[in-house]
Structures are given as C-alpha cells and as structure tokens.
Length: 253
Image 1 (cartoon, rainbow, N blue to C red):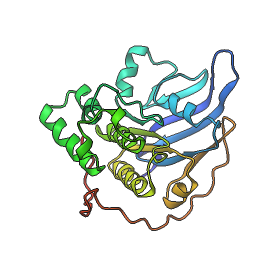
Image 2: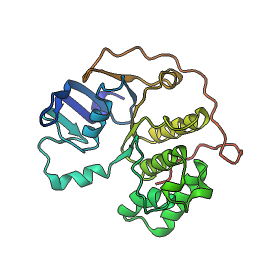
Image 3: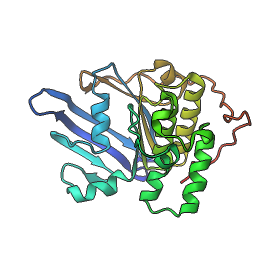
Image 4: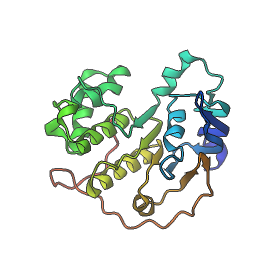
C-alpha cells in the first residue's frame, strides 16, 4: 500500500513544547505515524517520552510547530472539537488513572458507555476482555483493592475496549511479569492487525528486541537517529489465564 492509500494518523512538524517559566522539554520534533503502524517510543528517563504522549492525547498543545491528528491541525482546532478527537484515542497511563469509586468492570466499560453502546454489548465485551486478561474474578473490585499489576491490566483493558484508531501506551509492561507482558503485547498486536495505530513507550530494551517494530528514540527532548529494526525473536503466545489455549479474536468493541 503506498502513502497515498495510507493516511497519516499523527504528524509532527517542527514541534516544540515548553512550560511556563521553564525550558523546552521537546524541541524540533518531526515525524509521522501512518494508519495501522506500530512503533516503540524509547529513551532514558527525562528524555521527553511522556511529554510527547501528552501532546498526542491532547492534554497539552505545542508551543510551536504543527501537530496534526486524524487530519486535524491541533494548533488551530477549537476546544469544542477536542472531545471528539480524544474519543478516537486509547491511552494506557503509567500511573493507571483508574476512577477510584468505580469497579474494575465499570472502569473498563466507561469508554463504551460514553460512546452510547447498548448495555448488553457493554456487558458481553467487558466480561470477555476481563476474562482474557485474567481478571474475571476481580471485576467487581475497586482499584484500591487490586495489586499494581492488576490495576495495569484494568488500565490496558479500558484503553483497548472501544477499539481506538490510535493507542498510546506509557510503560504498559512496567508493573507486570514477563508472561503477562507477552499477553499484553499480543493484545496490542491483534488490535494493530485490526487497523489501530499503536505507539508503546518503554524502557524495556528486551521488549523492543523481541518484536519486529520500528522505534522512535528520544534524547534530551529531540528525536535521535533511529536504530535498525532487529529481527524478532520467536514469541509463544501464552494461554488464557485459566490455562486453555488462546484463539485469536478481534478485540471487543
């Protein structure tokens, strides 16, 4: 498929980001993500990864340059248009950001309910996804009663449940063991095969080596030279949490 047939979901052109009273945390960032692409975002702590993601999920706007999402110039888009754009984006936050007074089930269901999905569809899709990530028994529990790894799984499930056009994940495997990390990566790749553009920010070089995806490398707030894509290791897809074989299925939505 050529570029004319693969629209850009994200495009940065000379983007800078600074905060009042401080220096720029991102400067002269230029890159684009095509629809259906999968990239890693790497760099040391303080390189600007989280700031780059905040721009992409519309928490802040650039202080200079042009940022385009889904064909919309964000620097010129009115505030009333932003909620519609945000609904096309799934975000896995490093600190989870679960709603404390909602159960795991209701946290995951929130994007579908906001979109107006029928209750029967919400229940079916949320139950299936919670079962897949191994949290069926914890569906009625509040976030404060879950472990850090379980909260991470709820945050991932919430981000993917509505099958977003763009998925942004900030250190999604940082609080889980290797087996669960492989399951999450399989979920992200299945979503990507269904057409979602995926960007995963990570410190885990082993994760980057294991999967055949290019990377964007940040250093001191700017994009560094991109390392070559390494050949992926053989990855065995883990079974469901109950031990039964996993059959690839579309992510519920």
